[in-house]
Length: 376
Image (cartoon, rainbow, N blue to C red; front, side):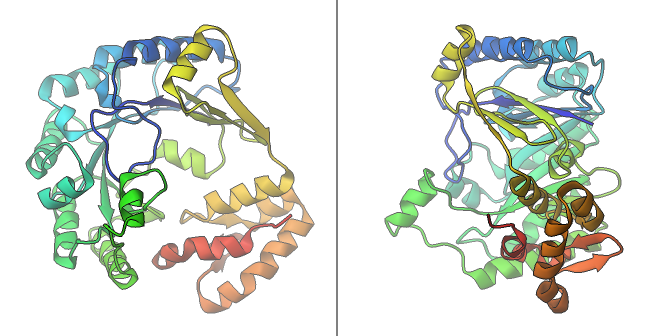
């Protein structure tokens, strides 16, 4: 399979934790729409397979009206010879959703929503500088379900400095009670160039204690498991057949193409490409047929490392057979050697051909995977 990603680099408000590319100025919104359409027309030969998924991310895609999203969607369908998508996701903010907007998304063919809720507690929404309220968070879920959306994801953030265990249980409980089939739960990361990072450097922000974060993770694992959710990727939980098809394509190394400022692409083999993360430069370069991207050809070792970093994020793990056939005996032997002490500690398991990190140890995944990477 292959996948298409559209990056919408606009937001109405700056969230203090966010390090994605976006602009709070909407002055170039129409120009960006036209440039994205033109980029789609320019790159029709890059996907060798008909795409199965379309994903609008950001930024905040719900900055655009459904009619504006339709312009991009129609261009994708026309240029990639696809009538419908197996999965068509749009990321949305709670305060952008109303009955008419949701109805128009359904008519557009959207069959999956990813709602950026982050918390059901006003204190924490204010701390993160989110622009919706806890009331809007719960109301938008009901509105989406009433509009006929069954495949819904929400995002929640834990590891906030002031988040208590009781509050975290409340957040997960509201999610479970809402009868939503998918959750993306992220530990707060304090990334460079964010407001939180600046506050951290000034001593105005103290990260959550590691013990507290671990306890919140344990609560997350238990409450979702008790409610029938599978923890299928480090940050993702699904019930039934609601695993994200689009994101799973990333984790399984499938080819994907990204359109818009800062969007990334991968040919499924050894070529990565990324667009310039600057709205003005992107628009001007696309309109004048200038280069607006960079690319790299990965070495065999870099491809192996990518496979380790993506496959071990999931419950499906890394295939030792695939490593032997795709990368060769040296990489296979290296993986087995580096895995031994983790296998003995139970931090890795080996089931038939698959090497996996048990979900209860996902928080240690960075440490584990680091030891399995090939150092050139």
